[in-house]
Image: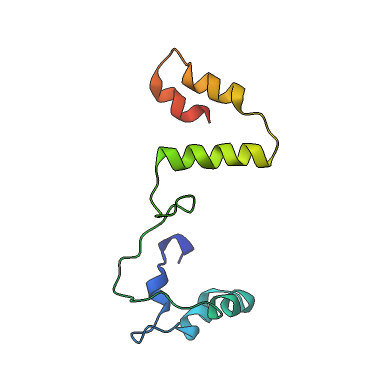
Length: 101
């Protein structure tokens, strides 16, 4: 069993509580204790979908990605202007622009 194939809903009971037995089967005790301190997800019947952490709505957008990268550049005092210019002024195939960053 790999962690990539597991869903959060698999670790809750039908009553909506954490399934502590199931958690302790696959995780170290310190992780289980950290999870136990969190509220279980509300309504296990909801779809288990990934969310983009860098957006208030959890949706991936180019704008939220750009904002995140610019914020990271400012916080790390790195200079990304040359990289951004390279991507936006690229004269070859546009598919390659996706892989430049």
